[in-house]
Image (cartoon, rainbow, N blue to C red; front, top):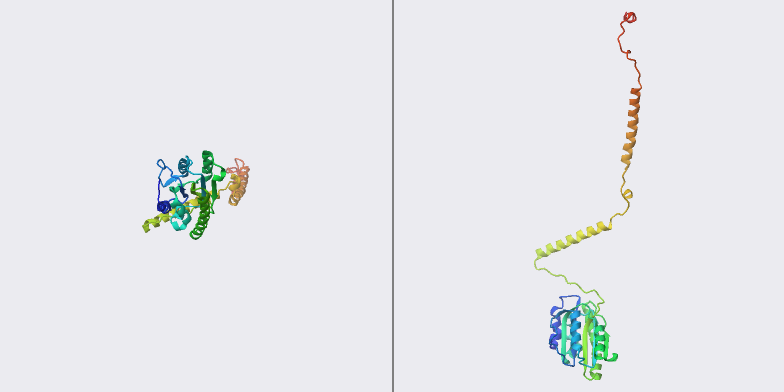
Length: 278
């Protein structure tokens, strides 16, 4: 699609905070490229953008190609022309422009470089691949790094304008991320619902931490080492039971050993008994 410089640069910030792990894509050329069958969606996967780029370059429109990798780049970095004046100026002078605000996934510039060399049968010197310094996560440092990288890119583009015979194509894309992308927390207008949501999150976090703690404290010792089946109280009770049972056995044995004749308790009625009574 044909875009003005404002649409290509400032238009990239339309969804700048939508996806923290995506990066913008810019392609501009001194040749007029046919974009009739190219998707104009501003949110695409890296695979689709690579296919579109190959389709745009299938006819080998220029003699030189410059592929620029900018690690940690996102659409917010290109929200203003002042952030990248050299890139913006070169983009304004191009005959064809193609951009995607949000490219999900890592864009492989090396595969594009290999495709150009194989398809156009160009020498290695005709396809340049440069990697700029990664953009820091802090706003102040990122502005300085973008300005420095833009100046370096401007020098390279000046050389292309002077030596490439006004026949070159530039691809500017986000490289591999060297820092974890920042996450964004949604803010709720209703304070009561926000408090309830925060309470639910804290509750889930607390339950998760308790489950994790229980899992970490799991005892894998054998059964007889983990539990004490005979406590000191049980041992004392068993000893007392043995002593009492022995006493009971002795008493029962003593009673059972008594021997008394059957007539021992009979009343005597003979002359001897009468004398004892007198």
